[in-house]
Length: 203
Image 1 (cartoon, helix red, strand yellow):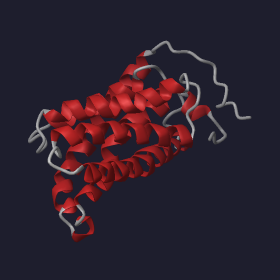
Image 2 (image 1 turned 120 degrees about the vertical axis):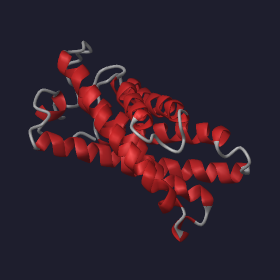
Image 3 (image 1 turned 90 degrees about the vertical axis):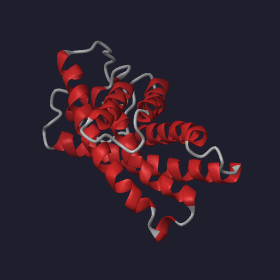
């Protein structure tokens, strides 16, 4: 059993935890903003002729919460990182085409990711937990979008949207976020965190 399976549980926040959440939030916020600019032309490609399938592009917007939770590993870290990223993408010059509704998206996406880390009592942070965090963040966001953007869709279309979003959440935000965290750890960027000190891969 790896040392990551039974980590010492210390839920007290350090200054570096707050700084890291803020830094990740700003960095991902810029990424979110840029991805928002690309979303419109990409979603209009023939590849996404079936409207609900455009949800496959949504996983990028879920990564902040997953990565924040995997690195900081404290209650609220996933939620805060995702929400800050959403806020930054909204307040950056030009904002996004969705305006201040992005704050609501950040709330639901961050809450979804946070609940998965909570479910494991902030003790497990492997690829399956990351995938679960991405999946639940996607599910929460999809249901929010049913009522905010796609209220005129049939329930079948809405369920398809949910399915595509969850796939993107698992692959892009979950597995992708886990891979990014591992890459940062390998590069020595996370030496101040348990994520950077682990030498084995937990699932």
